[in-house]
Length: 380
Ligand SMILES: *Cc1c(COP(=O)(O)O)cnc(C)c1O
Image (cartoon, rainbow, N blue to C red; front, side):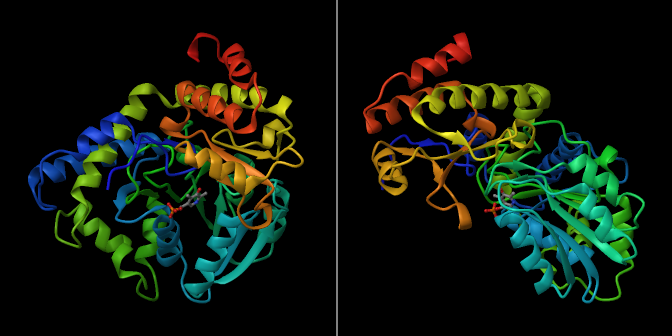
């Protein structure tokens, strides 16, 4: 089967970085070859930079997508009967609560309505007087485009004795991340989001405190495949645990290097600029931000309410027929919003310029692409 060039503007997967694409075509090597251990060592060092990890942090790739990163946190850091506190203001927070419950945790939630951020004070209240072992929060909720106030939530958790797990899938790699400053114990992302590598590996970071907590478990980690001890056997001890996807390691390594070479602050600016341009282009057509307060908006996922009367499914199908993909809503926002990805290679002016041109054709309107050019200037 042949596939035409496609404009993938969803909030994951994102278009492949050229360096990742090239790395995918490299030599076949074994997972125990010295070149691969050297490659893994470079990946581990670059992940410490990506996450702003303190000394003593273990970094690695899991052989799976971001959801495996999510599940590995609960499998390793919560034991049956442990109190786990989870922030839920969208589909990914809800997924965390489901996973933690399946691993036998006693789940309590702090909730907010879709489109609204979680309240740090609610975390402080929930932690007071309880015996919470682990707090888990999604930094950027992809399903609604909300940026949760992570520094303030982390502050509420620090000193409580609970470990803090952060889903950084839509943030790490597109802005500086400060695991050390936050005092976070477990952080993960997926290769196909902000790093624009192929899906299939989940970069993780585990703090020294979390490793100590893991070593003191009363029960074995129920997810053998992603047991931190087994992962360390391979990544640190260089002994066989499972066959890692070497080709994906090469691709992730190239994409991660490219991200760090570009600079995380620069990538943050790039996503913000393209997002500003897209909003300026679309607001006159009747699109409006799903999250009213700009300070609560996730810079990497632009969630837009549709203009009254616009047929979500038909319009996206017409775009798809022109080889352009954008995402609709999830769960309660299905049919009401679009979600435009501004992660990694998705946050490129040329791509969004083409999207706006195609959208003009589908809707039979004009002016969107030129408004975008006015905001982006020569970048467009
Ligand atoms: C995409 C995503 C995940 C992981 O999803 P996968 O499809 O398993 O890669 C987890 N959390 C958030 C916030 C996400 O956007």
